[in-house]
Every structure is written in C-alpha cells, then in structure tokens.
Image (cartoon, rainbow, N blue to C red; front, side, top):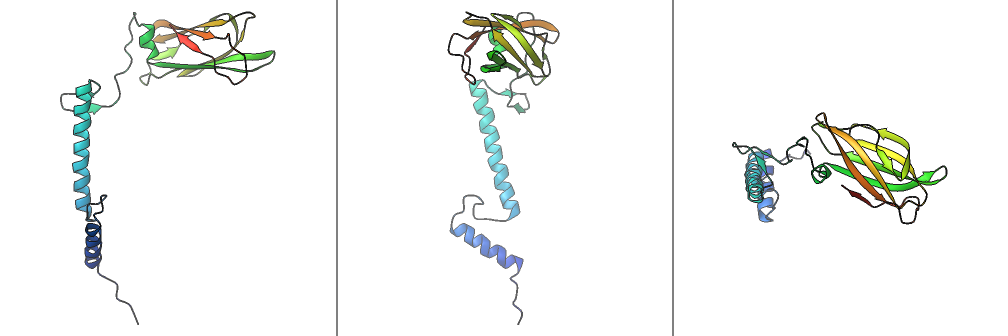
Length: 191
C-alpha cells in the first residue's frame, strides 16, 4: 500500500501555522521566501540608516553626499611634517627576549598598517645601546634582532621609512633594565 505524499502547499500551510503559533523570531511566522527576503531588506535598511546616522553624530563616518558610507578611515596622508603621534596611529611594535648564542637577545617587530601602499620601510634601523644582529623586512613589517650592550638600561631604535617618497623615521625606546628572561616582553615607548 502506497502512502500519499503531502502537497507542497499543505506543507507550507502547516509550516506557516507552526511558525506563527510559536512566534518564531527568525522568520516572523512565515517561511515564504519572498516574505523572508522583504523582512531581511527592511532590517538591513534600518541597520544601514542607524549606522550612518550614528557615525555622522559621532563624526566617525566617512560618507559621501549620496550616503555611501565607508567604515574604514581615510588612508595615511603623507607630508613633510608628519608627527610621531600621527605615525603611531599607523604602526604597531613589540619586542621580547629570545635565545641568542651568547645569551638572551632582543627580537623586535615593527608593523605598519597602511593598506594603500604609501608606507615602506627604508634602510636598516639605527641602534643605540645595542648591536644589530639581523634584519628581515617585508612589505608591512620589519623584524630585527640585536644584542644589548653591557650596563645598558635603554636601547633606542630609529626606524626609517618612506611615505610616498618622503623620508621620515620613528624613534622607539626599549626599556631593557628589567630581568632578561627569554619569552618576556620588553616595554617600548615611541617618539
């Protein structure tokens, strides 16, 4: 004896009734694709409007006259008088003690976060209070290792780079006065 398969319309009606009876918040009581699409579009319009208005109110939105909003800030602006604080918005760095042949050495990485390709690392960093061992540059980072001179509490690293062919540099001060334990972070300040 063959069983009769329910029609798609009967299945839709049963599903629709079940969804609306338990107040399903995801599909609002309807599994009709057009209804789901319409509700999704309404929610997206509300979200876009709210985020654009919120961004304008906070001064954090980058919208054009036609209300096309870019969630990312504008790219770096290269000029002869770029301050260190401005450059620090586009860079990050970290340093730690690592194993070296004669004991712990400093491993430092400097990254730039310029997606427009305007920033590029220049030559090797200039160090004071340490001797450079190795340098590994990439498009967006510069990693180097150095040995710290005896009786030195601070290492300064001057990192040169270009911004649209304008030569500039960032001065980083590493506080190496603490215990030199492999794997521990080294405090850094920038100027």
